[in-house]
Image (cartoon, rainbow, N blue to C red; front, side):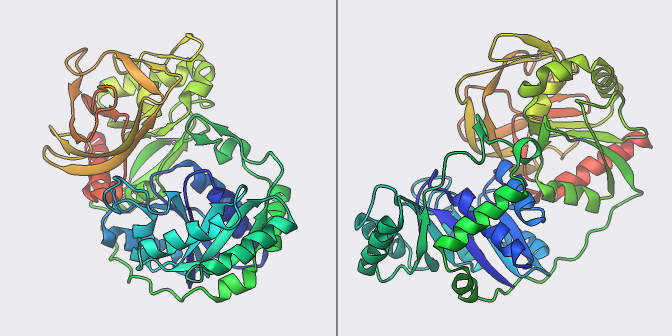
Amino acid sequence: MKGICIAGVSSGVGKTTVTLALLAALARRGLDARPFKAGPDFIDPGHHALACGRVSHNLDTWMLSPAENRAVFARHAAGGQVAVLEGAMGLFDGSAPENEQGSTAQLAKLLGLPVLLVADAGAMARSLAALALGFARFDPQVRFAGLAANNLAGEGHRDLARRAMASAPSMPWSGGLLRRPKGGLAERHLGLVIAEEAGLGPADLAALADWLEEGLDLDALVEGLPELELAPPSPAGTPGGPPVRLGVARDRAFCFYYPENLRRLEAAGAELVFFSPLADPDLPPNLGGLYVGGGYPELAAETLAANRSLASQIADAGRAGLPIYAECGGMMYLGQELEDLQGRAWPMAGLLPIRTRMLPRLASLGYRALRFKQDTILGPAGAEARGHEFHYSEVVEGGPGQGGLSEAYLVEGPSGRGQPWGLKQGNTLASYLHLHFGSNPDLARRLVASARKWLS
């Protein structure tokens, strides 16, 4: 098993495109590539899976412990041939500017992965060497596979960049990638358009692989990668009781789930039953609980509002005590109304006495550490967890102390426009936070136990 980390000198330099091209090129050669994503991003992993046919898993040194990162990596890299980790932001950017916590560099060192550094060299020649030299010297513990100069104007520009890199002997030259025509992956307010809506097709992926192989010596790159020492597998957990059916909302409106969260629920004894709030008129039968993740309910608000049958069933089930856990877009769906950017208010499930509205600007972004203020379906009072928040909406009506809602979380970090933390109503728990269950293994077990208890 070999491995590599694709990192950028900053955001926006093309590291996702390079990662997808590399995954497609490896798959075309018949190599079993195992993709991973640094940080809390939900969208890039979906495109990884399209490029190589393997589920991509998130790794994060802020949300997860070193041992947990190694365990997740080993679990999903085992049996493959090349592990490919796409970084986040710039190589050394993380949760704070004073240290490396949460950075791609910290994760690459933890896993023993050499870094292919991607730089936008579209307006550079010799300055590329100065940039490369600074990255090579900044942290001597980071090992570099090389530098890929992206966005080059043509063969002449590529030759200039290659010759300039002779002034940075501590950073290997991996090659230069020519400027690609406009097009490819579309973007919207939370990042790229999700793979379920506008993923690259076979012809697009083949073109990406061709582009990468024309600019880089892929054989030499793979040959130079180190053999990895994977952590021994962690012992399998015990379910703790009979299997229980857990409904998981999944469609183009609700698609933000960490695969590890779903795996942990299954390991705890959940039979995951997927359903679509957009298309299904009824909830699946015999459920012990619901998990409604984030996504883009605002882009499908009219369709969600029209599906009154399912929305009413969810609200009735929640009022009856069915354990329901919802994150971000899922919380918005459980509310009374969702107001879109055109000012139109769409009725949602009506379980929680809150209204949300979309904003033209970012409302909140960042890592969050929390402690439970009271017993919940995810954990007892005092339990701790970590997660991430990223949304363009806000709660404009309702909150703790209103309509039977109470605040479930104490959260560290900026409050993000004063949004409520962890709305609890009976056995329903909802918030803007996306929690990683690997930050506290009891979260998944507790949710499954809550579902099992409700059915008993």
